[in-house]
Amino acid sequence: MRGERAMAILTYDEVKDKASTLRAMTSLDRDELEALAVTFGETWAQQEEQAGREASKGGRPPQLKGIEEKLFFILFYLKTYPLQEVLGHLFGLSQGQANQWVHRLSAVLKAALERQGCRPARLPEEMLARLADEELQEFGIDGTERRIQRPKDDEQQRQHYSGKKKTHTLKNNLVAGLVDRTIKYLSDTHEGKKHDKKICDEDGIRTPEGSSVYRDTGFQGHEMAGVVIYQPKKKPRGGELSAEDKAHNRLISRVRIVIEHVIAGVKRCRIVKDVFRNTKEGYADVAMELACGLHNFRTDCRLLEY
Image 1 (cartoon, rainbow, N blue to C red):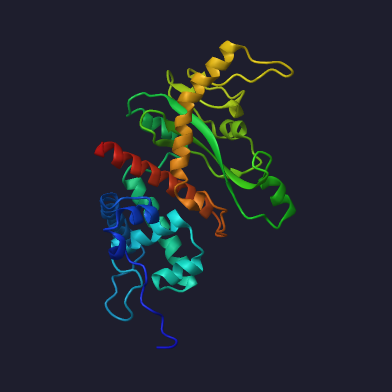
Image 2 (tube, rainbow, N blue to C red):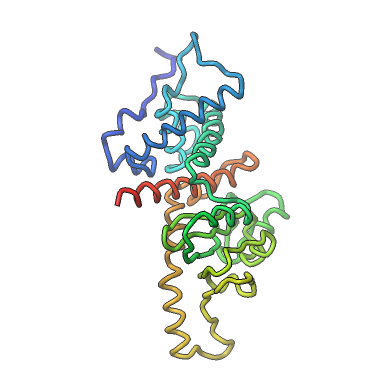
């Protein structure tokens, strides 16, 4: 009837048996999604209880029925990053309802990934404490930028303008294991103008003593006590690198390329690949943490599989 909202168009049941479609929509396979749904459901129930909300006993049925449907909704949003008006239409919601569900379920997913042990550390001390319980491996460190809409404020424009990307960006530094390919540390989200080395200096990023770290020339001058650092040698001004230096740089690049692959894995979630549009304060950082946590979750699942 005219004026009534149609039933949800897109549901988990419709796509769960379509492997390639489900992976394109969520970045996860069915077994992975349903395994995560167990922790997601426990976290949802805990947060609902803490908020004093009880299960609905009447009235209009919920727009997103069941835990798997809720998880599918937030994964679909992070992976495909549609306009919220489009998201609402696909799931039978208004734009306002879609917005509310995005932020509510993002908090649940963030906590669920932490319970799974997939959330990257956000403090250097936290990372070192976790790594103390893991086998020592080589690490890579790199910065990654993502575009944002051009700020209206002149000062914000200057702060977020990236000379490297020639556009307005946000920036994070990541530390990843080069063997297990998981993200160990995610820095705070900074304006695109800030240099990679300065972020490292301010955050005090370091890895365990005796470890090896591969990085690019953007971290020139940043030191870590007791750590072996492998970094390409810069071409001298007005000169050329020797054949030996070029060969050495190629060897470093072959190892360091792993962290580039890790960042590409994070950016499977288009919310951290496309121009970031959300305006809620702090959500840019939450989105990056969720994308990193999902990368770690996928990596852990697929390492176990193989």
